[in-house]
Length: 430
Image (cartoon, rainbow, N blue to C red):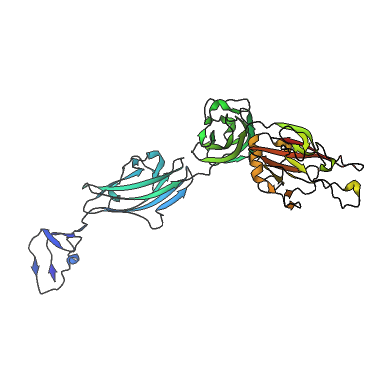
């Protein structure tokens, strides 16, 4: 039995205790346990030791991805140490967050730090609501609790703010052909994502194009990127006209549509800028059986020459002497002369689009590119020389003669029944 008189006991968190004020204590008997709580007149205070602690609730993820402007909630548990809790500071990327963006337990905070009330400074659960910024960025939110002894503790979580980016589409051919110094047109369609559209930028091989080379309809921008006005804030639907480079070659034009949140939509176009091609029209290659200065074609000037001529670039292979119908004995096939290579253009193969046509060939560089996409001839003559299939109107051939490249369109195949004056009619560019 313990007899208690006017006295106070303070317990430490490790279970030991000491007497602060004591009058006479009379102990009768031996007890293995002292029942302090049995003393009805003794107030007992539990005093924790050490620093405060702060933790994020287990139902709150350490990392979360949200949309710009979304509200996210963080559940926090605060526990006191040796001193009473004083307040909570909230940092956003190491800067105190604006109080107008924060609620604690559904109430707008009046300051940052947020000071805890007297009755709420032991162990506290807080529901913190934060309105995220309208920005595409990763944010670290740090929560710091302090006590009246000057001790602190902190925890943090990562919020990734990610918007829906704008969408941009270039609606045009896979390869745009332009002649140096002239202009090319690019049709663009853009739609906003989360944020309003802000600007459009044009790059040539990853370098911004000079503004004086760009036109948006009737507008010539003074900068690149070019700021959009309010009429383009939701939808960008314009043709961009760009003056071609002054040097021939392959280029990539990249179009970057940026919104107010710095999110982007990107598309691009391949451009082949080149020197304008020269065209010769209605040039004839005659049946080799005609003889004389006929049977071969000099591509340099389009003149007919003998098959033995050193300038015989395309050589007809003549007639089928075994044919029973002499009016149809012309084979309608030709082969390459010295230092000449012939390939077929087959629409829809080797990257040649279904929309390709001879009329859309404008530059020398374009013909070089087409030669790399051409198909080899598969037929052979008696001397194992590659020859064409029987030629049809509308067929296309690409030809390399030393360092000069040609594209030939078969405009006509004229077959005569009475003699060997049959001929092909070619249009060609080089």
